[in-house]
Amino acid sequence: PLGIELPAAHAPLAPARPERVDVPALKVRAPVTARGLDADGAIDPPPFADSGTVGWYGGGTRPGAPGAALFVGHVDTETERAVFYDLSTLRPGEKVEVARADGRTAEFTVEDVQVVDRERFDAKQAYGPHEDGRAELRLITCGGTFDKNARTYTANVIVSAYLTGVSDS
Image (cartoon, rainbow, N blue to C red; front, side, top):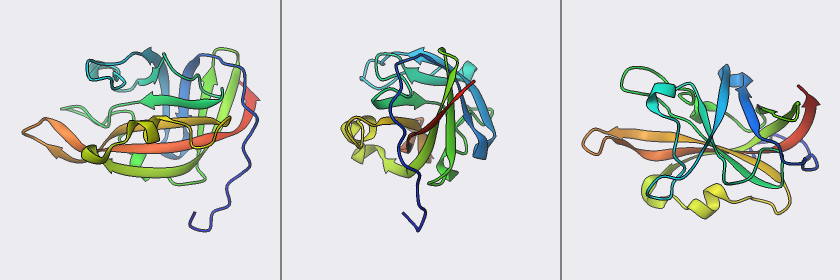
């Protein structure tokens, strides 16, 4: 995409719980906590009081294992910017690193950044892997404009990345 040559995918890793996510281009270094689903079946983000924390869907794929691991974070709160405030500015080729409980860091490369209107949000496309057997990561937050009446944003920012390396933490 756009003349950027992306690196080859790394072989998937054994499952391990995520502990921290680093997005160097955004100066993000945040703890990760397991989250479940809300009443609507969407991933329940961390509480607004924990706006610097990233939620990982604990019932799904662990980062580095085959499939798409799902991370969610707030874009802002009523009073401040939150962990994924600048997520929409990520570009293909930039890195996302996930420190795991097994002492290894899974290194992902961004391949796509989309802003999707809530009416056109396709959970299977957003949450599912783009390539079978590949270890992938999704970073998801709110985007678009803020609807003051509905008290929500009109879109979601979805960053898709895939495993391209591993190092010892």
